[in-house]
Amino acid sequence: MNDYKNFPSFLGIGAAKAGTTWLYQRLEEHPEIWLPPVKELHYFDQLYPLESEINNSSTEFKRRLFNNVRNKLLRHVDSKTDLDSDYILYLMNIIREPIFSLEWYISCFSYSKAKAKICGEVTPSYATLPNEGILHLKKTLPNVKIIYIVRDPIERAASHVKMLANFRMKNNKEVDLISLCDTTKVIASSNYQSIIPLWRKHFDDQHLIIMPFDKIKHDPKGFLKSIKEFLALDKDFDDLNLTKKVNKSINIDLPPAVMNKLKSKFKSQQDYFLQEVGH
Image: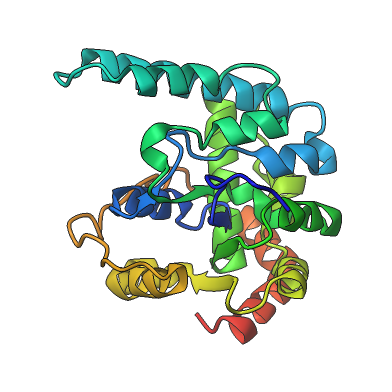
């Protein structure tokens, strides 16, 4: 058990390509909540990475972290508001090595304005943590609440493949859409038959909420009402940006051979999803 009052009270754990950026932005707007300015801290999944990411994800995350912090600093300095020295020092602290240490994770929640708020963070990769990773997470954050958004596993995987293809094209790499269907991350993130029972094993209904992605599209206000009740917030979420689209679908058409492969690969996951979530 820890003694750090500013450790997160809740985590958004995924799924990848299932509205987590939209959720992060709506949580960030709520007056009772404070989130680190960088989405996806990746603390726990760096301690327990998927086998395919052991050698690669740490470097990539650090690059994105540094770029995000640089952009936050530039925006703050260029803004018309007075400079906040506490905020600047906070941002500098979260890019200090050793990143992914416990001390670093603590520092991510050390900003002075976070102290009177409910803290949380959103990292979609947490959903695919192994059993020992979830045990470590629960030991570190014994009272944490878990928000898990699930999307039809075939649709989710298709969106994931498009994202990976787009990333490879931007980096002038060859794109093999069929091969991307078999990447560890694509498969693991749609593996609800393993993920949902594993998290339910460690968290009861008071500490784990599983929300359907489609509700963001069809009833965003109802979606956020459920989150408000789950986190025991006093105030409602702002209605202003409920239908705001973030991370719009990448304009890549997946050929029938790719979609057929995904449908075949994730048919049992889809059956399970419909049984458990019904959307």
